[in-house]
Amino acid sequence: MISICNFAYKQMYMNNMLVKVCGMCEKENIRAVTDLDVDMIGFAFYPTSSRYVKMISAGAGIIPDYSEERLKELKTKGEMKLVHNKIVKRAGVFIDEMPQTIVSRIYNHYLDYVQLNGNESSIMIDNLKRSVDPDIHKGLKVIKRIEVREKKDLEKCREYEGYADLLLFDMKYENKETDRLIHYLDILKEYEGNIPFLLSCEFNIEDAEIIKNFNNNMFAGIDVNECFEKETGIKDVEKLGNFIGKIKN
Image 1 (cartoon, helix red, strand yellow):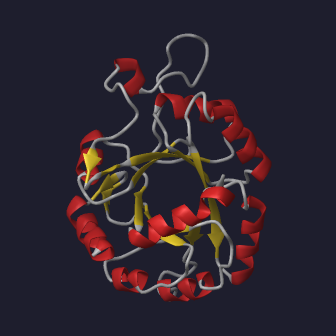
Image 2 (spheres, helix red, strand yellow):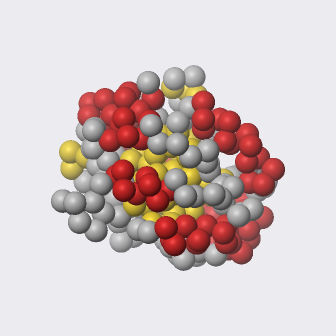
């Protein structure tokens, strides 16, 4: 799929930097964040996360079973409200999860994207898409996370050419006192793959101008997770909105 749609993705992201806000788990905070100019909300579906979104058992002997949304029939469609003339998409984050569990989450939480943070292979991604698209979720897209500390880490991307729709380059600061975003962006300038990518790290408000000036044709946008949180899973809407405003304008 990505080999066919790649040019369209590239053009879309160049015109509108994608902002994904991950680690959401509280209803009112989610509503407030979706009122900002965000493109995607991410939910943690791996039990080791302090932001883990639980399922509800229907007593059928199958766990996981239902999301709260499905159980209470709060929505008739899996689309969030129209904000800033676009639909805010949903992404579920998994780590080496069983495919049947991922499929259950896709259905119950109306997921538009699946983000894979573990050691998932391109074969697994291909099988997942074939299982879900079109019967369960037409057009499901997959984001593959890759941790980047040095240039050679970019070689891991090759496996996912033609399978992943987006990459997420997770830049882990080994030393928060000395590591800087600009250092990692110098590494990402060397990326020559064909899959658009998101950038994830511990952003602060001062990073906005650096991000806006970063130049790589496949740079799609940013993933905001634990930064700009008031407490675990609760985003500081005012600070986050200020940051997004600087990024988008």
